[in-house]
Image 1 (cartoon, rainbow, N blue to C red):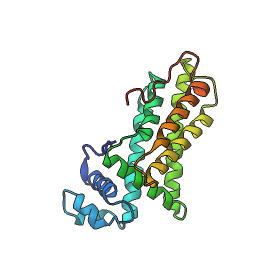
Image 2: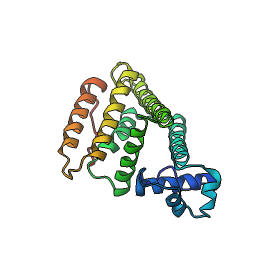
Image 3: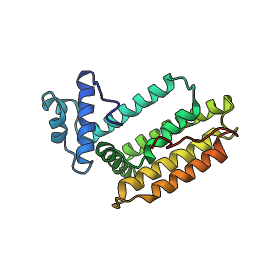
Image 4: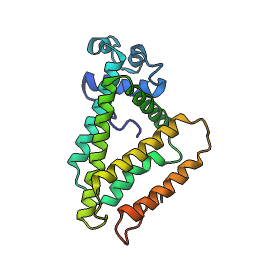
Length: 212
């Protein structure tokens, strides 16, 4: 990840959202304050207060911006290698060793998603994010079916299964205390089996995690 959406923020708004991303990754939602966001902002912290009324306004704007960027990127890209694209999307959440920044951001996402239980604004955002990711997965699956490298199965249903597995893995990674995580290897093995038997056409190899 490494702050992929904020590598070169343009204008005050994007710079504030980049600061929000950094502060959220560093502090988590519970300890996040507008002052902490201001400390990550290269311009006057007063600008943060001028543009946003609360930390939730900032966090939701940051999440929405990142999701918009993701949606724009994948709809603009031609899928020339569906297997590679699918495995790239599925792989990062089940990598055994992520950077501290990546682990911190995953923990923040899980923390924020839990707010959706009681907060309609967060509920709407994460409902939308599920739809966006599942559309992306379904688009990849349809491309693979059209190219003859994936089985002709319902891409929308398969996308739901894969997205749910991915988010469940992120929740477990973020909420367990054990440094030893043998479950990741078990999930990876079963995911590879699922892809081989239920998704990929005969003769198409699963290369997920081959480079670990």
